[in-house]
Image (cartoon, rainbow, N blue to C red; front, side, top):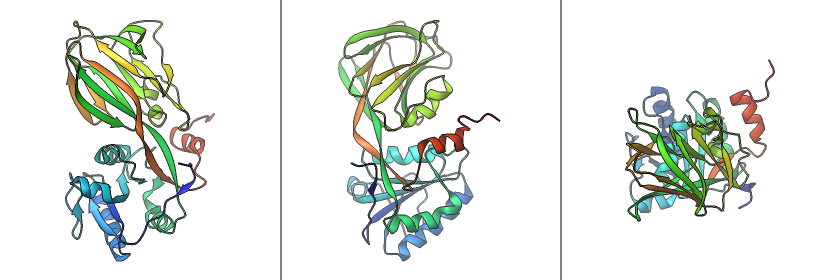
Length: 295
């Protein structure tokens, strides 16, 4: 799909609202947005883990999720990632409004919500595809879990456990054997999140790569590595690893056992962000992260 493809919504389309749960301001705005959309003839849903707004339905079933044409997020990046997890790999577009602190994924201001929604309904917004990650946990050779992630897949030690001993492979070839607090595999979109905090590089969101960044490695030579996104990356925990956790987009967590294997590849799905036609990634870096600021 072209990065400038326009989002076109037909009347009576299904739209879901995912909002920041603990913020009264977000709940209040969600009710106003719901009424606004219903007045325009749209079928409005809310996320299944939220209190249902009067006049809406909870998007719970596969059929309901398949029918969604747009998700509107009112919150921060955590709320946005919760909406991504709700989709379970579907490429339903998400339009995000920032009601959190940083708001790198929720690029639009809450004050502009009705203006931007009107532009969206008028077909004046564009879809920007973003690559996602796909990860699976293998235990004794059998797939235990599978997940799609927009930002990152993280393997990290438990709070009281020792360093993780891990062998890292690319396409079955050994890359390195590393002891560390953990490992981050980040997509280009996720390079500005945990990866950046751990010393990893920023990636242009349209670049066909992902990055593996060790967290506090017990080595002077372990550094972030960038891989083409058509490669398979695998992590094999050795028997000395006491406890480790597998985390998807900072939200879904699973405990790993010694000798588990985690395989990460590019997802077969793209995530669709709704953006202004003149949206620029580097402007967002300067605005949100003060990138290149000399002051």
